[in-house]
Image 1 (tube, rainbow, N blue to C red):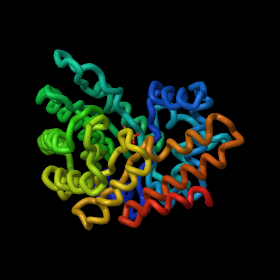
Image 2 (tube, rainbow, N blue to C red):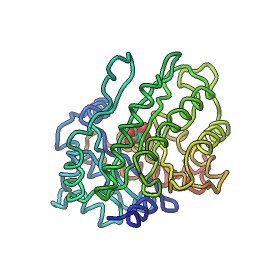
Image 3 (cartoon, rainbow, N blue to C red):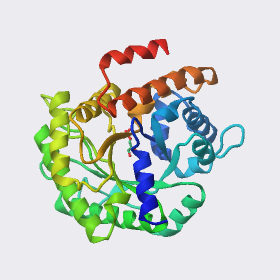
Image 4 (spheres, protein in one colour):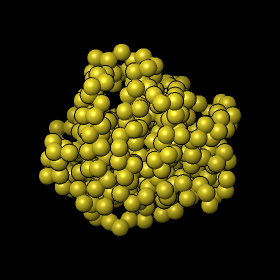
Length: 342
Ligand code: 13P
């Protein structure tokens, strides 16, 4: 598959009114989510929960693609349809998380390097056979007086670019995800400075490793005040600081920026995206690739009980619709009331 197809897939993932569902929680992360609702993380429960999300009627109006985990891409719906086939039948593009997690970075206390490059070429080939058309790799960075170090910023940028080049060779659109964690007491200015450093390194490495920007998507954090900051920036300030940072550092050839939610309150993640799109048009599509901010209400409504599937699906559909509205700056907090009536 050449650049034309990669670009077409990237553009389809950021089609008007649509964004991506991140349902690629690793075993450890899904266990944490299930623990929060008192459900055992068994293979069958994980399968049933993902089936609930993927069979939500109408969600495809707002969901262009779904990121799967290694276990999930091999699972099937109750009627035997493999999940990738089920998604494709609704016009939703299957994707796959291919990194093996953020591990301690040697000689750099409190910093991480994302692993998973060894054998990646072979794994990408298999995932493509299984139906994946795009992939995801997440690197993480913390903000404090010493962090992130240049060492952490550049080693992760190098690994992200190696992953992205292998994806393009294999015919998969790489979503590059450098996540500057927003935990801590940092100011929005500090968040902007760090996010800018990380993006600058990332686009240098992507360029040097011959990655075609047009066949990629960027999945970044928004520029926020730290979650424990004494004064936290409001919606307009977040939208403006985030746009300013991305205008400086993200090439216009990148078709889309699909934000992660990163632990924001669901409605905040929607309002921030909306405020950015309301200030458009921009050189790139601004969309979402949310995990928690799309799933939280559904997870809480489900609590592992098959009788709650429909209620949970309504909750998921509602969040997808709200974020779909934020794609064009048409979201308003009053629309949240619809949730009670749909
Ligand atoms: P959150 O939206 O919950 O941050 O998850 C997105 C994601 O895929 C993180 O890698």
